[in-house]
Length: 234
Image (cartoon, rainbow, N blue to C red; front, side, top):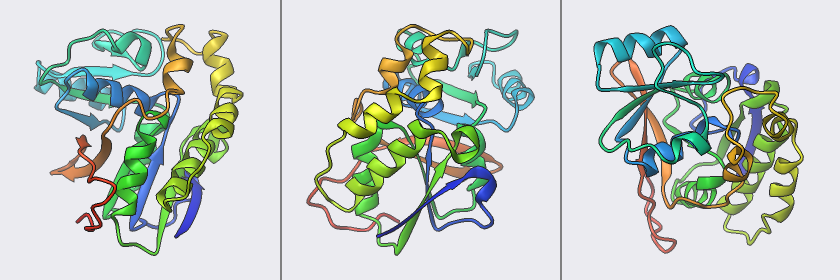
């Protein structure tokens, strides 16, 4: 399997299969939203679009990076979201990097959004996909975020079926600039447990698939075939 690791700015054409990685914190938050009962997540292009979606659908939930802001229900923090009941709700999410990366590859035939919390499920889904190669979109720090690159490299290795010790990949993520900024309070809208929650390997058993539904890029949880199911995913 050929794996490419690109920043958002390096994407010159839509790949066939894209894995968009944002460990701290967009897709850790997305996974927690699904675990808390959310039906789907609409990936908004801007804060204004997220608020406009919520205005059209008052029962939707809007969340964004940074501190609390008028009109938004929650911030992009797994520690804060894990106690929220989202049963049956739709979430409109806008973040600095993760949602931008997913929208950049919206024309791909398969778009997966991932972090360490869904790493194995993502790798297993990739193993069912007959493809010559996968493109991993490293969303943070213009493609240089080590927490995202470490997670992408770990998933890529697991996608080959190779036994891989996660410890070194998690260590790199824990030592990343993003982890330090979250721990030191440089970033706003943070819970003290956010870093630890972002580094929980395989916390959830599902992968997350994004696809265009009309004009919107919608993220949904995806039950993953068993390790012995060799059928390709459409």
